[in-house]
Structure formats: C-alpha cells, structure tokens
Image 1 (spheres, rainbow, N blue to C red):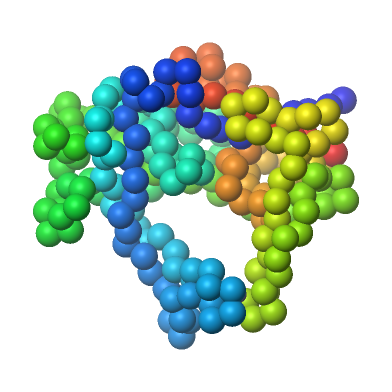
Image 2 (cartoon, helix red, strand yellow; image 1 turned 90 degrees about the vertical axis):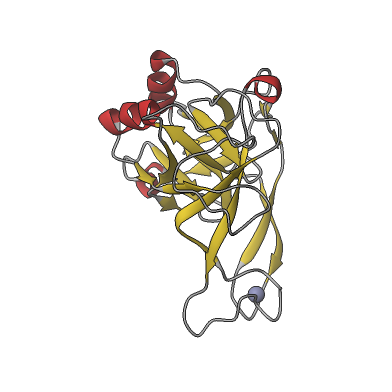
Length: 224
Ligand SMILES: [Zn+2]
C-alpha cells in the first residue's frame, strides 16, 4: 500500500495577507578548527546556534500556529501547536528563540516584539520546530539528480524533479524513502535533500484535526 510523504509548507492562499513571516538573524557557530566556508565549493560550515534569533518581516499580521522562515524550510510554532505535536509524536523538538528588532543587533529583546515594536500578548510563546530524524532516501527510485560533489568537504547537491511547491508531484516522481530507513518515524528530513520537512499521513491528520493554522501539506514522495 502506498503511503504518501508530505512536505510542510505555509498556506499560500492566506499567508501573504494574513500571517506574519519571520527571518533568522543568527547566531552562526562554526565547529572548532573548521573554516567558515569550504575553500573549494564555498558552502558554509556554520550552523545555527541556540537560541535562534528571529526578526519579523515587515508588515507583520496575525501570528499563525506556524510561522515560516528561510525559504519555508524552517518554522516557528505556537505553544498550542507544540503541545499537540508533542502529545502525539516523539519526532519533534522545540527549541527556544529570541526575538530582536530588525536591523539593529544592539536592540536584542528577550520579550517578543512585533516588527512595529508592539509586544505580543502576555503568555504567548513561539518555539523553533525541529525534526529529530535524518534518513537516507532511495536514490534509484527518487527523482533526484546529482548536480555537484565537493572533493574537499564531501558534500553533494541534488536537484529534485517532478515536484512543485503547493502543487505536489507528478506520478512516479518525488522522494522515495525505504520503510526500514525511516524506522517508524512519523517526521524526518532526507539526507540527500534536506530542505523539506517530511511528514506522514498521521501527522497531517493530527494537525488538520487540531485546526492548526498557516500550514499545508504538499505531496513530495512516498515510502518504498
Ligand atoms: Zn566543499
């Protein structure tokens, strides 16, 4: 039986006018003894530190249960969303964040502020949604094409064909993940193409049943 994998994304039909978006502002940390960028391929070696620092994008509106950042590959969630996900699944972690005013690194705030400087309601908290698991997909079945490989840092880049954001995938295309590689996980990222946050039908059902806002599910692949 086919079991579809979905990528989480923001709701393009309502998001632009209704829900705030944010961007991360650091801090970036580099493992000791590693240059900030690979001298050959120029990929960054820096990773995002904790707590992540966030600034709202201009024109902030309502705060959805999901707030999207960084090309829609990372999300903040409300306490309501975190509680729902944690009650049903062991695949997510929720990391602390700090809000700061855009453009002024010296104006760091420990209290969450909107872009216009208004405080958010008391007791309202957002957390960085993190998926615990990284699994390998089946490259033979997946419609991933190797585009580059670096001899120095050994990293590889892949293009994904036949899948479009907010549209889904063409028949037979997408990311195929062996069930044994997923080991029963309900949410994970794929090592070869780690942007999408992939979830199973069960996660979709919980999020939809709970009525969480500003998140949609785009068909990206399946278990194989
Ligand atoms: Zn490299």
